[in-house]
Amino acid sequence: MKGQRIVSQTFGKVFFYVMVSSFVWINPCDGAEDPAKFPSKPITMIIHMNPGGTSDLSGRKLADLAGKVLGQPIVPESKPGGAGVIALNGVAKADPDGYTIGTVTYSPVVFAPHFRPVPYKVKEDFTWIMQYAELPQPFCILSNARWKTFKEFIEEARKNPGKLTYTSPGPKSGMHILMEEIALAENVKLTHVPTSGGTESISQLLGGHVDASVTAALAMHLRTGKVRALVVAGEKRLSEIPNIPTFLELGYQVESPLWAGLIAPKGMDPRILKRLSDAFKKAYDEPSFKELLGTLVMAPIYRDSEPFKQLVFKDFDSQKKIIEKLGFSK
Image 1 (tube, rainbow, N blue to C red):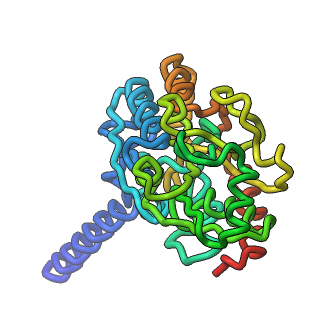
Image 2 (cartoon, rainbow, N blue to C red):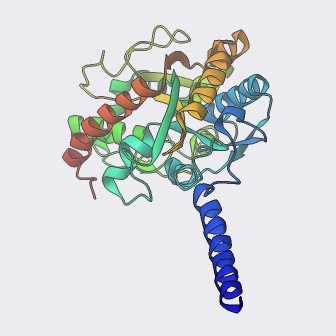
């Protein structure tokens, strides 16, 4: 009897441990949310550029509209700096549970990884939610400046190497690369003044601290009469300034990716991605959002997840060649 009790007790302990172990094994994500019930709490949208710029204003509007669709607020959180790299790192390192997403433009994914180390891998670390716009980039001067055309600006730069200054949204940003391409083509020296984003870039110009600036956010300031555009980066002329030519029209064979979109961390459940994509598509289709894009002088262009990813990867590869040509690569 004593032996039977020992066997029985031993069997009971083994059975208990097996059951506990089995419970843990079959419930590794017991605390995880059911993707079908997403979202059950507020979502954070990390905005990669300074407050007041086109990425900030358009991102916040999308967040507000999509939050209403989802039934949970989408809370914008500004993390400017590094031409967007700081914010994208925050997105890349977040949990892929749908509760951290971010805005993105071309610079931190198409340019930055080719000329300095970045803490993420463009083709591996993100889920691409959608593209929602293109951002025309006018090259502007103050309204009372002496140059009437971009040709005049370049001719003065040729006579005075390094004297003329300009700002862009950040060092090695897309517009910085574009201007260096043009300077190389013209064999002139322009001095780039680094800033932390489009807002500071504009402040430098409006304060008379630089001769020119090229950034998407300047498009809104054309209406104030304080600045004039000499040329526009993009495939088409801006409807706001139909008499101002594009760089392509002036004979510059340059590529300038100009898109804006939304991203999330890699590994997101497809059901959560679809929930986000559907909500943001409804936000994109809202007349009030299209009206804001018009105010910001942004062109509404929609690509869902897969086409957006393909666009980013194509630009990533083509701009690598340009950056190597300029000697900016790592």
